[in-house]
Amino acid sequence: MLVPAASPTLTPEAILERIRDHAGAAYLGGRVDHGDPVAEVSPAALPDLFPALCDDRDLRLEQLVDVTAVHWPLDAGREFQVVWQFRSLTNNLFARVTARLADGASVASATATYASALYLEREVFDLFGIGFTGHPNLKRILLPEGYEGHPLRKEYPVEGPTFPEDAHRNDLVGQLDPDDFWADVDKANGA
Image (tube, rainbow, N blue to C red; front, top):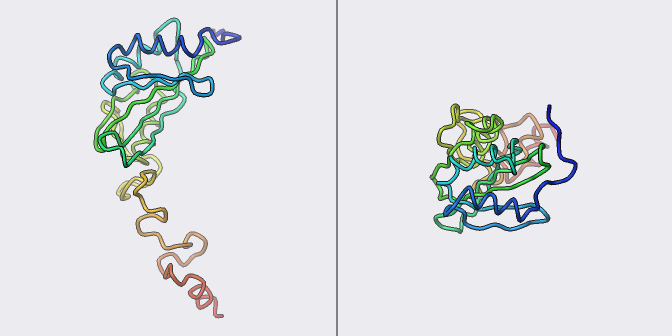
């Protein structure tokens, strides 16, 4: 039976120190952001780091809460920042681990250690186009197969690749000129 700690068993600084110990030379830096430890590591450290974070008795980061990414298109060679949010219910801890990678690069999957990564990584793949090496079923999860592009990349058009402006608000999809929307609606309604 899980008996959670009433208060955090480690300080944010101590959590960063434990992550640094596990990542070794691949630890690129850390900070405390609004009370939460945030560690940046090299992508090469991740295959060994995921089980270490889960199995370390002082950390016991047994829950992967979220995986997301941030697109920094002007940062050549480091365009993507993948972010993993971990939680320890046992020790009442929270930690965030990030890794930067180039556009087109893949990062290790956490699915061997954290079952929740199965769907979280598929979402990041679908919306950002980031691959996860070792994922057993990496395919789109929100958008249909064959959909062009990855909508959370900053170069992706806000309105979508071929989506007429305001077409989602009526049944005239594909029949409207986005530059003259209201005139087309009036004409379609007999006005």
